[in-house]
Length: 376
Ligand SMILES: [Zn+2]
Image (tube, rainbow, N blue to C red; front, side, top):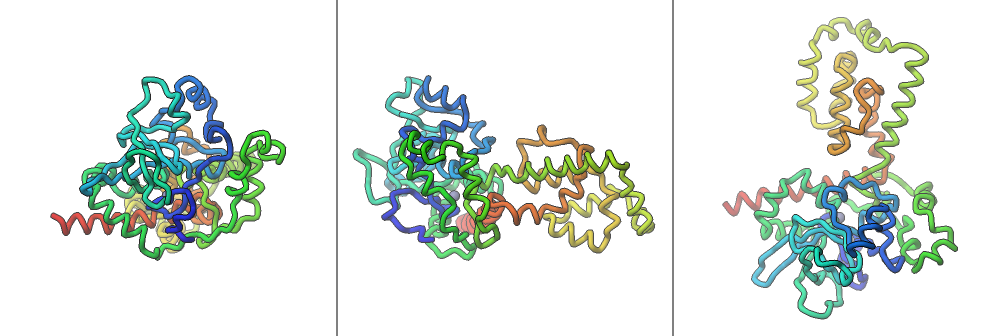
C-alpha cells in the first residue's frame, strides 16, 4: 500500500498508515444514518456533538470508523496542537480544542452554540483550500483511542513536538509491521453510489446486508484482512453470546463436574490455593502465555473462579466501558471462552486490525519514551 500517494484526494492516518474514508456517497454523509439521535441533532443544530458516545458506537457500516479523526496541527515556528474530532474530508474543519469531540454536518447552517472551528489543510493532499489554513496530519479517532490505551494521552499532549517527530518518522519509513494487502473489501463500490435513490436501486440500502456480501469470502489472517473497526468489534459479542447459549444447553443436560474431574486427574495440584494461582496468572501478559502454563498444569484452570476468567476476557478484548452489560460470572463458562482468545482474534478482521495498530502503538511508545529520556 502506497501511503504517500498524494494523487488520491483523501488523507491518510499517520498511525496505521491507512486511508480515511470520505463517506461521500450521499448529499450528507451516511454516517448520520447510524443513530436516529444523530439525525435529529443534525436537523436541529447542524451537527452532532457528543464526546462520550462516539467511543461506544458499533458502526453498522464497516468503513464508518475510517471517516472520523483528529488532526495533529503544525503552526508556523513548529508549534503543535491536537484538534478535536470530526469527519474527514479534503478540506477539514475540525474543533480547535482536543477536548471537544464533534461530527460535523453542514457547518454553515450550524447554530450559535457550535464549537470553535479550525480550517485545516492536510499536508499530504495536493489541493490547499481557499483562505488561511494550518497544515495538519490526520489520525483516525479509533487509532488515537488504541494508542492512548498504550501511551498516556496527557503525556503525548504535553510533549506534542516530540510525539510529532516520532510519529512522522514512523509514517514516512517503511513499516516492519505488515499492512494487510486487501484489494477490495467493498468500500469503493459503496462510496461510488452518489445518491440514496441509486443506492436503493442497486440493493445497497441495507448497510449490514451489503457489508455481509463483502465479508463472507474475504481472506482473514494476519497478512490479509479487511480494515474493519479495530475498537468496537462485534465479533467479540457474538462469541460471548454463542458461549452463553452453549453453557445454557450444557447446564440443562447435567450439572458441571469439571472441577471434580480436574482434582481426580491431579490431586496434588488441587491443593494449591486459588489465590496463589491467580497471583501467578496475573504475572502473565496474555492468553498465549496462560495457555502455555495450562498445558503444564491443566488442573489449575478449574481452581480459578469464573470471575477471574471473565475479568481477563474483558481486559484482553478491551471491553472496558461495557463490563456492566457483559453476562455475569455464572452465566457462561468464562474459562473455556478465555481459552479461545487466540482463535477469536485470528477469525476477526477487526481484531486483527486492532492487533496491528496496537503493535504500531507499542513501537511508537518505545521510541517516544526514549526520545523523552534523551531530551531530559
Ligand atoms: Zn489509523
